[in-house]
Length: 55
Length: 252
Image (cartoon, rainbow over all chains, first blue to last red; front, side, top):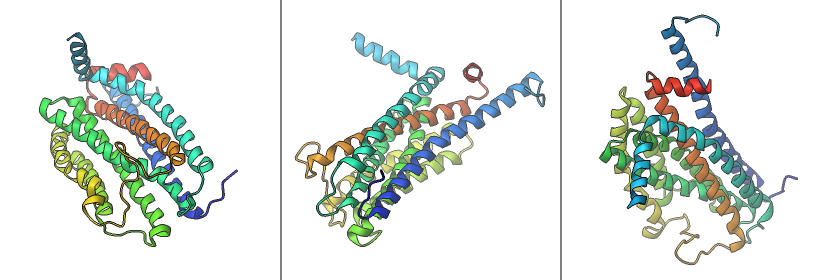
């Protein structure tokens, strides 16, 4: 299933770096969106005078 | 004339934050889906289909991620420079934000390029790193990307930060031809161009498909992340405006 390569450690570590960086690029906007939406919800609740209440 | 007019109107519509936000959030998932499909095909071919190289054996498989990342690092900079020029000349805020969103993704691809290049260099050249023109100019590109990100983040006024960073983007353009032609202008340990769009490539045609698929994949991924980052930056800047309330409220 997993191909056996010469220089396998070099090949797989390169592909691992690629995967980690791509995953990191996907994760950062996702986390930032979550944080921003939470902040905006809080701001909206604050403006509406319902800050601190359970949604 | 009518085509030109509709293009112009479309371009102006994109300058409107709600339209721009909608476009980014609708397109990004499709671009990510495209990335997943093309990268799956590319990776499968790179790891399972193409034969080992007669000189480099399997180590050359690293190039299927190294080369597309390097191309994207350069293409990303070119896109950012065009957007920065438009932003500085016509003061279009969405273009400014888009230009700034290119920098972290471009930096990520430069990082992949440098790291995978070093890993390939160890078994093939016998060293992780040499200070030759191609490698050094690529490292300078990473520093320029980081400088742009730092400058943009350093200003309380995001628009002022973007304008100053856009000027740095245009100054940094000088590095792009240096990277591209470094292997011709100087004697470098890094090999010359193997793939030539306007002439004969010296790479075996059997090895081309994974390279093409991975190149398409990273382009789709770059555009997806650029749009996601730009749409979030826009929300952050406009957080007190009604359209943000409407857009976020509609999704919640």
